Length: 335
Image (cartoon, rainbow, N blue to C red; front, side, top):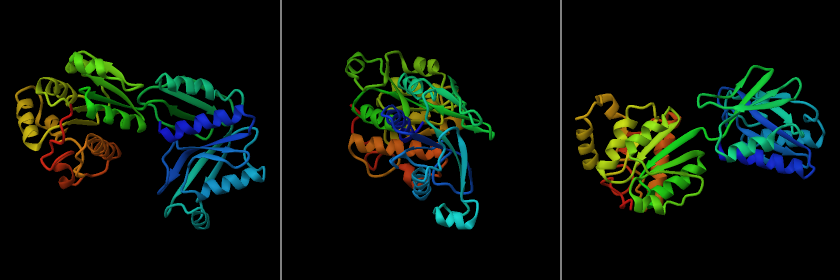
């Protein structure tokens, strides 16, 4: 789930414990253009304080006004739809043709927010079910394939780490990439069989694997919510990880190095049991060409490309050709 929405849950729970009346709003349907995706959340406190967002701001303003007028859900969940008419769309400044539907849920003692937050802190994927008629909710273990579902009577939302990132190499660049990836809600695993690097790895809330990269890739059972980035500059480590990752459903597989080095890497990979299509999936040089030089800048470039691929955004060849780092795509040493 998005970090913003996790903050919403935390604030909703804290406000309720402090004695405030709290309503949570969740985007459950959109038509046309929408400023926030399905599942986006907003917590509204009785005094009008907000956490999160469901639109560009005007829907939030209307919800605050309804709170002040005591017209917002106070007993059980209810539905609210914005942008049905052109007048509403103009009033709430929704994108052209945009309409969104919200479930408004009053927070109660049995809402299960604390239990949900504890599970998220344990990096567990959870599905939460809300009965619109009764207001009762329940939690169940989630699956990687789970998505938001709403049939008008039952709302299913998914919470916890939805995306996984495997980084090959536990050096300086990996630490920056891991930190930034966590802010984007990736569950980060770092693989490095080199003792001196593995011993020094100290990124909080990340896992360190000391096995060989090909074994770790296989053990992780990668799916379409996974990304693999090889950063060691050592073909003995990077290539064996890529051999397995490129055959997996992972949505993104990348490797640090110049264009020349990655061309040689593709030639090496072609000597094994990879098809031309699988080799073509490799993002190498890794990252968008944004002129990055330092490890933090290179990490930004890598995550920018990962985000574009994840969102289905076309990347012009010129933007991806050089990759992160220097014009040659090598960047700084990852060590």
